Image 1: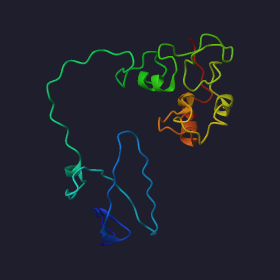
Image 2: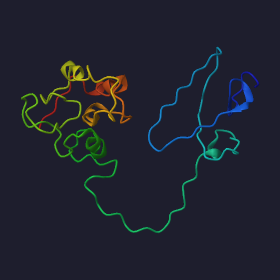
Image 3: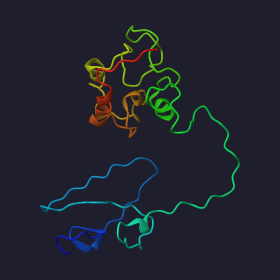
Image 4: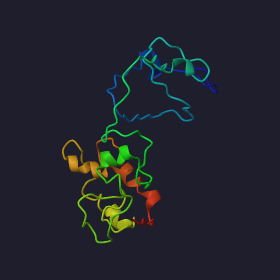
Length: 184
């Protein structure tokens, strides 16, 4: 590989005989890239279903083409699958996120400031329902970090990135809301 040039590669361990192929299920995935040589830089990663595609320029020629639309019946509205951009209560969490987390998508804030007196939390980052996001809310993650939603579905409430595991990324989702308050 020529140095000081951007080059598309589809192999690992320095040998073009070691092609990179992965089989992914539907859903979210994490990609961990580790460089061992100094000065190695990564500009773009493309996952393509076409193993014979050779990226040109920025590699857009290997991106999946949108499927041709086929005639279908108009979708029926469903309260359990709102469009991803809808935020019914205006609390900056989409309805689809609130459905996953199990929070009330119709209320942006708890009705009272009494901690945990409501059956369904309203504002996702306010774990104790006191209308303020602070370190007390972050402490709710304490015994849940590294646990899996598949082992305990109630943990969805803490899985802000919806990857099925409670981790530091979920805690970091709290950062923009720290010291913020809501009002009903």
